[in-house]
Length: 81
View 1: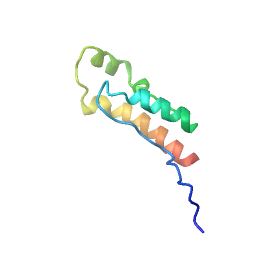
View 2: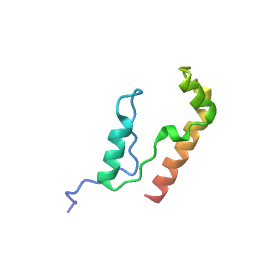
View 3: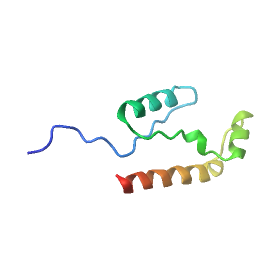
View 4: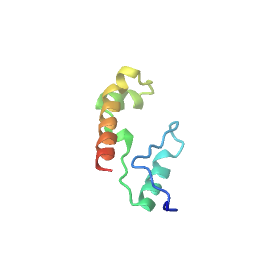
């Protein structure tokens, strides 16, 4: 007989435009679910942060290292289940 308790995902990513409340919602969700919360902006290199503060849009090349770091976190989380 299958369990009626839904299985929670190992990784959940909250995405959206700047200022939409992603951090607030994700942090509250993580706290209630007892999950680990990572703030994606914490993984930007200093050059990206300087560009964003200056209102300069990031290019795909700017995001490459940032996405690599985030993907490594996801891969580790999935491996640890």
